[in-house]
Image (cartoon, rainbow, N blue to C red):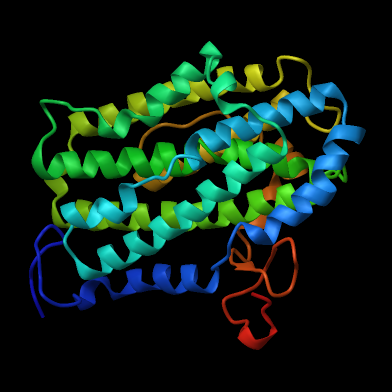
Length: 330
């Protein structure tokens, strides 16, 4: 077996990284196209949105979708190009499959914004979005003190933490809360749930690769890089707090509170900090989380794998369920 590290090019599949192949297998099992949601959104959710929801809800939903689309409606090229920095065959395989899923996400959210009449260019004129755009681009910023392998690690950490998780989960939660509270938008909720499950795979893969690099090259994860990551997470937290005020600028929907959403957001930030081994923690009310927030984790993470063969708007099946492809309608 080769003793080459993850940064070194090898001519074979390195068995030390075989466990990463599960990401490819999972994404294959979860394959979907935007068409599975488009009809339900167009025929059910859009009429309900236009005719049954108050203006406060409509505007909040448009803004929440804008914040997700700001990430999802731009094809994220990071994963398919990661193999250029980490030339392992399995990295290329996972990155390629993730790239395909990001195209699916982009097309699904582009279709959703069109269906609900969300003008992304107009929305982007709001100055509240400046902080989000700034922190989303942090992973590609140049720093003369961070070069070579350390720059690869910095880019991977910030992309995994900020783009794949911190920027998205609060707004997945908010949009899914409508169906959870029996206030409609079931197909839109299913799209959020499916996208969130896949983003969780992307995030977990990023954490796995980060841990491999830390183990093989512990000197890269030094005080300077750690402090930089902590600063960027704090900046992202401030930006997301401002965005909660912006989304609810016209009023707070009847089924949710800012306190509930902030509590969920803080818990999500804490997950990221714990996974990265950072000494940083945000305030979470455990009782409030159990009472108001815990449904999201049960919905998305307990089974964790999309199963479009059982539910036309997206359900979840365990990895043990075998799918009969003959029952799938192409």
